[in-house]
Image (cartoon, rainbow, N blue to C red; front, side, top):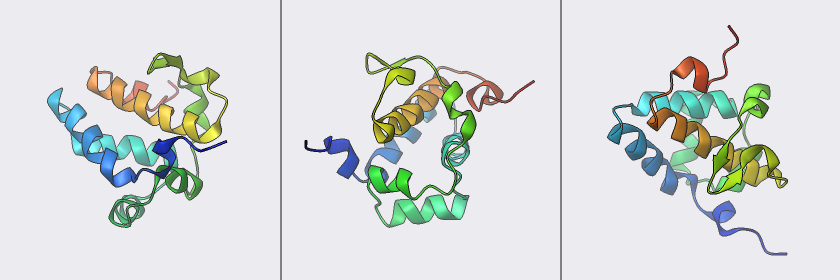
Length: 118
């Protein structure tokens, strides 16, 4: 079975689209970065290095220092598919990130996006 083409796509090619989507809705690059760091465990410097190295999505998630255990709390539909029902692990991680960026663009509070317990 061949891999989905997004796996071999450079994260650095999609990252500006995440920022543009957020900024069009009055959110910031810093918030996008915070979401990505929360999800993956990358530091800001490590995230910037991944972007500079043009790491593909598959390796971006495979090399993530510590995928956040609270990410399983992310529920909902992205691209017509429920994220919690995606069986392929890498695709699920990609869709988790897409869902979080969507929530940011829709104006959701960062505490809710980052699934902070109250």
